[in-house]
Image (cartoon, rainbow, N blue to C red; front, side):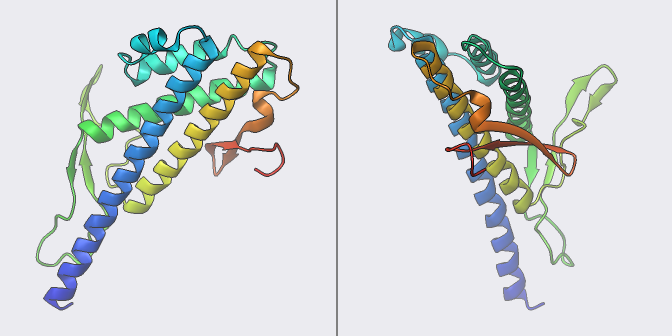
Length: 205
C-alpha cells in the first residue's frame, strides 16, 4: 500500500470512529432529555421548581425517579409493566456503557509500520471489584465505528420509547384514553439480544 493511500485509509477510519462516538453522545443526551421532560410533565405542577431538582440528578438517579413516576400511570397492565421494566434495564445498560466509554482510555489509529487496518479502537477501562481490579465483563474492548453506531441507534430508539411511554402516561393521568404504553412500545429478542421497538400508530413497527 502506497504511503499516501495508507495515511488516507488511517485518517478515514479514525474519523469514522470519532463520528460514531459523537453520534452516540447526541443520542444519549436525547435519552436523558426524554426522561427529564416526560418526568416533569407526568408529575405536573410547577415544572420550573421540579426541574430545579431534576437538573442536579445524574443519569442513574434520574432513571430511578423516572421509572418510579411511570409506575404510577393509571391502570398499567402486565404488558405495560413488562415494557417499563425492560426499558429501565436498557437505560441502565446505556448509562453504564456511557460511563465506561467516557471514563475509559481510548487508543484510536494506533499501530506500527505494518498496520493497514485501523478500524478497531482499543479501549481500556478498569473497575474495582470483589476479585480486584478488572475490566467490565460486557465491555467491548475493541469497538469499531459500526459497533459504536449500532449502539447509538439503539440509544435513539430507547430515547423515542421513553418519550412515547412518558407521553402516554401523562395523558392517562388527566383523561381517559384507550391507548396504553405497550400499544406503542414493545420488547423483542433478536439473536439473543433484547430489542426495544416503538411505533407511532401501533401497526408499523
